[in-house]
Amino acid sequence: MTDSPINSSTTPLSTSTVSTSDDYFEKRQLKQGAVGWLLLVGLGVAYVISGDFAGWNFGLAQGGWGGMFIATVVVAIMYLCMCLSMSEMATMLPTAGGGYSFARTAFGPFGGYLTGTAILIEYAIAPAAIACFIGAYCESLFGVGGWIIYLICYLVFMGIHLKGAGEALKIMFVITAIAAVALFVFIIAMAPHFNSTNLFNIAPTENIGASSFLPMGYIGIWAAVPYAIWFFLAVEGVPLAAEEAKDPSKSLPRGLIGSMLILAAFALLILFLGAGAAGAEQLKESGAPLVDALVAVYGQNSWLGSFVNFVGLAGLIASFFSIIYAYSRQIFALSRAGYLPTSLSLTNKNKAPYLAIIIPGIIGFLLSLTGEGDLLILMAVFGATISYVLMMLSHIKLRISRPELHRPYKTPGGIITSSIALVLASIAVIAGFVVDPKVWFMAAAIYAVFIAYFIFHSRHRLVQGTPEEEFESIRKAEQDL
Image (tube, rainbow, N blue to C red; front, side, top):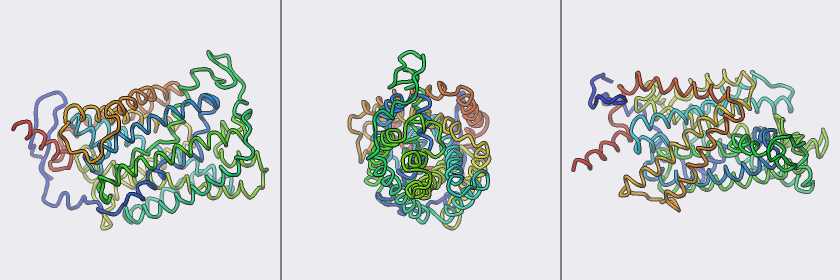
């Protein structure tokens, strides 16, 4: 790769592209046609299913059951609108960059980078939070947790991903199916013991609007939003498989929308039946809420508790496993385009971006050593909600400025749908600050470092010929004509 600029300007955030060697993209190829629509549905569910097993219950501590319920419904609406909007953009620009590619097309290199790095913060930190929950489940089941479990998770599942996407996603699909069985068993087991009074057994505070339904008052709804997001966090990662998908114009919308509907059903059933059978107070600080709910109802040594604990590990592992896929593809796309060091997009003989898998895994393992799963959730949610705002702005911008673009799938409701998601995502950005300003600022500081890297370094080294850069060249040529 040479350092000779092909295109540059003198505006404060101008960018330059550099020429590449003939084999640059040959060394950065993913395995095309490896993923069908059913695997994409499985991928979408796998990204998120760990949120059903642990993490969501911290929202009960922030808002009580009523606050968490309202937050979950609002967040589900946000995600559904967002998935409908992303389905359009994913079929319009089916590349491994996902949200980064959409924003790059709508707002140029800086907009793409802001979106891509926000997504990267989400995907790099979320596995660390999930590793903490895996440790809690292993501690409950085997008496062994902590750093050794975190290390085993990262080593084993990064190793599988290095074998290639098709193999990894097929294994992930099986693990996700096993986890779904555990959720069905939990739902069936808890349904006969549901008692609505258990939903409201958290003592009301003196906050404005406090009641048995909203024990923390109106502010509790807002504070519960980050944990309601945990029920759905990362489902938007389905388009990251675009370059490896079969018939992306059909499979990507099916994957996004299908997985979202399944996740919404699980979230509401677990929120009602878990707290309704065991009690919101009993679950609000649990590291393994489904297991603790079954213990509260059936006793310490019940086979149901042991089954869901053991099989529930599959749910946590499925999300951990699949988000490794997500962060590696996001880094691959950003690196291939020159936003991050280009060595990170090199692929091995199995067409897997090996450095993009390994390096974030090392960082994630170090973060997991904090053991603060709830705080890591907040950091991941910060990155996620920033990216949601930017992606929905991209949908609106492309609808207005590029109506002629071929859209194999069109969002029902058009920009009204994406505007609903935009407003709700903007509210969600601030919700994390309500819960813990210190953690929110820590995540913002990480984001600021990424932004500084672009301003002072990578904007002068963007790569010519990437799918997003080629799309922009076509746009400019059309304007000239």
